[in-house]
Image (cartoon, rainbow, N blue to C red; front, side, top):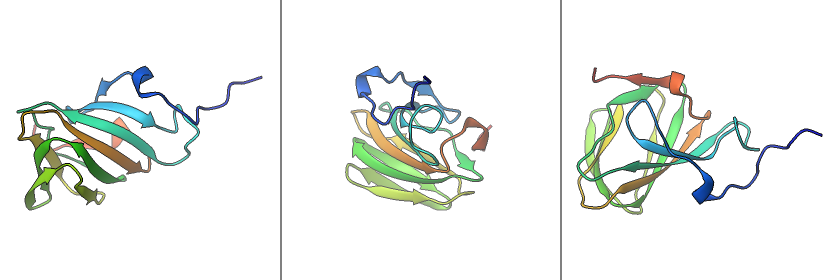
Length: 126
């Protein structure tokens, strides 16, 4: 009998990895490993003073929800401050990045549809 995809995860058991934009990610749900079919949910952590690289996704729509910390976001031509409780939608093809401007880790829940793929991340600040 084959093992069924996980429909439940425990945060402590999820190993972090670095995405192409330089953020530390924990994939909370992803079709490659879980029962979810077409979207992904991850936690991104950006340490104080650090920033993600400017990038875009050709196919993926993202929603960021800040759960801790403070930052500054570039979203296309707009630049604005972020703080706990803020939510941002990022349309496909929109250049974006975040910088942690606080003293604590900036933590962001990232929902992606379709699910996050390294291949859909195009770096812009090379």
